[in-house]
Length: 214
Image (tube, rainbow, N blue to C red):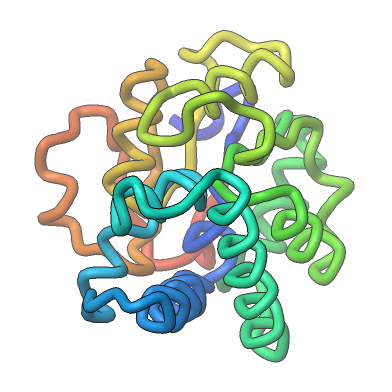
């Protein structure tokens, strides 16, 4: 199935790099400092979409947009500092990207991360040259699980949604791909297979990219 695809679209966090515990931890620190009472596990389930959307879910009506942007920027800076010593691609991904690139499969990134975090990952892993399209939280009006991120990425790559395969790690991301009309490969970095039982667009699950071929 992968060999028939014309384009691959990768989520970033938890899909290319196993950094979601650092995002969750950074958000938990910020939320507690703001007087929130969510547990680490509860914060985990809030970690999707844009930063201002997350803050509005946790603290409805409390902060102005400017305040939410400032809080989000502080959280992202904390995440980058704490994660950088551990930054590396998920096992096997570098070889998989090289093979896909050599086979002239177009690749893009469709992520709810901000541009600064995508740059942080690509520049520190030397993988920027593999990608022909990058769509971040800064580039869409509505974040995942809305399909805009993946549809916009497919458009930039020059392919129909049905010609793209998405690599994701979260139920919200798989829902986004399903709504866009795209098949999905799920990386089990933070979630278990049972959490994806409601989706019919999943090709298969993987632990990492070590034995994956295209």
